[in-house]
Length: 518
Image (tube, rainbow, N blue to C red):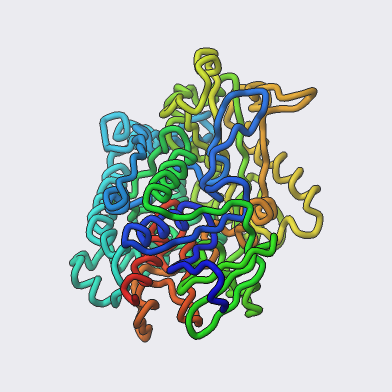
């Protein structure tokens, strides 16, 4: 370390939402903070861009919904960022010998939802089971969510405190697939419930990695409701940048870190351009695998990323064969080929080394809740954005022949969706250049190269439960779930314990660990 170099209390590597949240908390505590971002713009996987040059539409290119951002972080930092509720939670089309049908579920239980369950199953029993299960989950979420912004505690202590032994045992101690099979009888209903355990996670319904995924998706901010970011994800980044600058954070873009040194008094980093910065602490708000590479250490093991993502702009919403109003079908999450058995079979096919057919999909339309990401002209003409997310498409299926695998996965995704549409989705896609559509396809390989997601894993690491299990100990910075082997370096991104999703929890906890130790 050289005393002639500018020294900061904390250097933060990574200008995504977690890095910015950490920077704001530390600067608010009067710490001198430097944030280094490798790209031209901040945001990482939380960016909004005009993806198709011919159209003034700003898509949330990677992450696209918000459910995990705690109100406490919004309040603490004075974040002026609006999320919009979705009146419809999901619509799931299906077909049998009698033709096409669908299950419509509102975000708040209503007559329309009850009627939809009754038409599907022939009685009120399954609808009652659904309502009962998710009311229990909501009670657990409300009691468990505040612990995510506090030091880790023992599972036994939290279990006693939340005082909901039944749903605790189901979500924490029993494979989620077994729980769903016990709770529900209808294959389609079971599949809709299972999807929250699989988003971004390549796991079977019998794997506790699926339980952890389900838990995080359902306890977000104490409600678990997925909400639409008004103006797109970029609005959150712009607001966090404004707050960080107002608090005195120094931000350097185009500053890719290529070396990290650590000594008894702190750390030093060197960027690709040769600049060197010193600090007492380092918050690494990028993938821990990248940190391991910079420190010449072995990369931590994790599950592969398992999602194909397609961003689309359509000139009109497609019509479904079931006859449902498209503005209802696309208002929430549109589940395609995601019955319980289809999801289980798809995992088996992918595990054996092939892309599933039919491919399970989830689709959502930002613009039905928020037209502000479109120009007035596009909005008046009836254009909409669609985000498609395919399950059980793990990273390894794209490594041998990336271009061919990407093309085949795209064909399978469109084929899967078209199975339930009156006209092919291609007929609704906006034209974009000669013989091209306004459609962008990203495989796990693309997500790794574009935003540094290890093997395309949106959680960086395997998710773990947000508490200490039997035999685990955590002291010092480890009790915040952010510690590394180096006393001056903490993980402040999705790879932290209780990280993942658009939550800012990892950034908050990294900042708290540093402030507590200093």
